Length: 220
Image 1 (cartoon, rainbow, N blue to C red):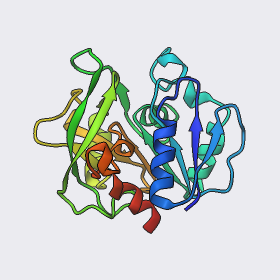
Image 2: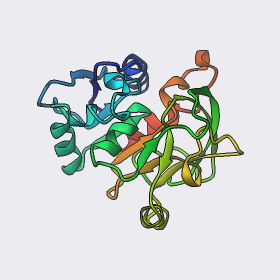
Image 3: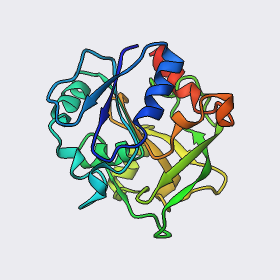
Image 4: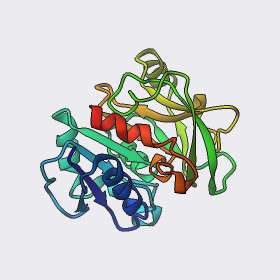
């Protein structure tokens, strides 16, 4: 599986996700700079975590208008896979690839800890290695992870089984509506999630609960 990781000014998890992709797939991903206008020929594009442009205006708002994002949108429109993690999720909502918005955490504080996630939609390229209802450990580190959508959008996400992950067992760290931790596009080829599966793929990291997400992508 060929992949690319987009790097913005302020990204800080690009090396983590590149390491995870290479470890699981055996193929080193390409790093793509935000000012580029074209993507290499790849199956998957990843928008990593961090604080693109210092989170000015709103988290992800400036990055969503970066030159490379037209190519990311075109890749998604062709049915290519796109994964946005943490700041990447924020960029996907700001860029119109996913519905809803990520707001300031309900507690108004940066949260950095481990949570538990429930796998909800498992018929996707990102989650097929999980079973529905699986509960997995995953770290979070964000200040603006409070997912919100209006009633109509939320009903559509629920009705179309587009909620990929929920915070489980009372571990919602940010007040996200309906405990939503990750959602899918209408064609299920774009996933945005606040937790960091790339930071729990090897025993030395304390567990491998995030590894099946990357294994799912190989199968896809």
